[in-house]
Every structure is written in C-alpha cells, then in structure tokens.
Image 1 (cartoon, one colour):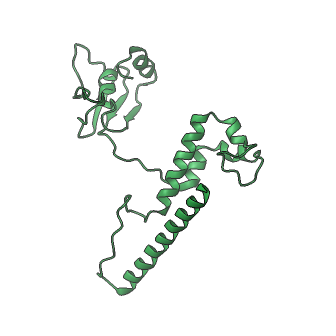
Image 2 (tube, rainbow, N blue to C red):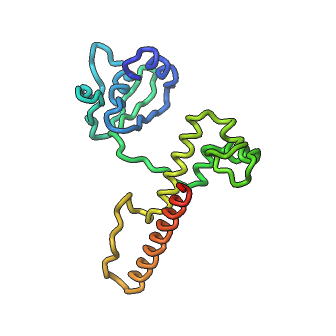
Image 3 (cartoon, rainbow, N blue to C red):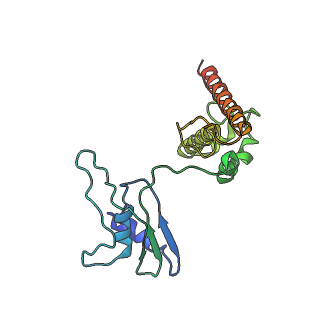
Length: 197
C-alpha cells in the first residue's frame, strides 16, 4: 500500500543499490503511486503522473501509457509500467507444478491415487496447504487447462476460419486442427457436465 508509510518503508529496505525492480499489475491499482513513494523525491514532487481514484467505485484510473525508469534513494532502479489487461502463464501444467513443487510430494500421501485435491477425503494436499493457496492453485490450474484448449496464438474467443490463401493442403490441415480443438472443447464440456451431476 503506497499510502501506508510502514509498507513503503518495508519495501524501501529491500531495494538494494544496483538492483532493478519492475512494477507489474492491472490498470489503476497504484503502481505509479508506489513509484512516487519509492522514488522519494520529496517536496511534493512526483516522479510519475497519477490520477485520483474514481469517486463512484474507489478504483484507480489508467494514467501511465509507457514504461519509465526511476532511481531510488538507495540506488535501485524502478520501472513503472502501464497496466496489464491479461497475464497468461506459459509452460502449461508442468510450469504450474514447478511453481507449486510441493504438490507432487504431498499428493503421494493422498488417500486416493487420482485425488484432485478438492473434496476428496484423506487429501494430504488439502490438509497441508492453507485454503487460499489451494484456491490459487486450482484457479491457475483451470486457467492453464483452458488456455491449453485454445488454438495457439489466438486470444480467448478469437477463432477465425482459414482464408483460402496458399496451398489447399495448408487449409485442410488448419480445418483438421480446428476440428481437433472443437472435439477437445466438446469433451471438456461433457466432462464438466458429468461432474456437475
């Protein structure tokens, strides 16, 4: 919290000379306000422009439009970035399991071999992890699996037909790939519907 002096001081103590820190986050969450607090220009001067929060919902406004580099009193460099619309995980389920590396070790102690660490009795992962960490793991796992069903390089909801440019073989390959994606999607929906019963 950039408006809390104790929070800013705690973060300040971690900014070492020669280090570079990058602030990433959604639009309007206070990255530029934090930049101003950490840059410590004093005299009410701001390193980065900010806008007041909206009165109707108390949320910040999108102000920063380009990356900018700022020095801190400790000699660290701080990069303020515009807000991110989406941030997707790369590497699929393997990368997620690497980030939550203790899940495999703990899962060996689960009562059921196919435990999904949700409602199953005797789940060692649920017993060991705090509920918020488990919820975050499941949320990221759903996101990774959903992204795995999406055609590569295409954002959510953007499925276009192949234009008949180039060879007809390429068009046929594309159609076959689209059919594969649709089949996976149908299978996932059927699986989700079966779980809901």
